[in-house]
Length: 189
Image (tube, rainbow, N blue to C red; front, side):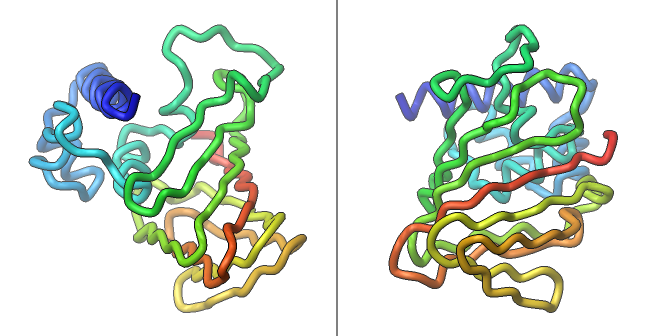
């Protein structure tokens, strides 16, 4: 099952890259991810981390939710839980579920995340993500968010707004998983 997902991710990245007439070097330059790593991902020889995949997707003009939307899937205003795309970050084990219906006219993506205790994911500043914003709404556990030079400690019920392109860090300092929702606004991209 894991190999199938790695292959599907690689095939999708390659197809999107070729559809946009990008070389490996073009995508590497736009994403800040090495040409060799992109090539390994396309051949399913490496599993991209959340941070790396987000940079590649941004360079391709997509959010992670758009990337994981099923090819050929018909647009529907209803997103049933059993049909929502789920992905596990190979580095931290965090699980993201794309909640919002794919392929609608909305610039907003809603993602449900279960973030393991002690996990940390860094999203460095990236020009392709400028203009995108997100709200992080914590349901359970603890979350420490660093945006630029400022850190915020979130408790259940707290919601933090931030620009995506400026870089940020998610950290669960607690002893239990954190569960939160990300509401991402692609800003009309």
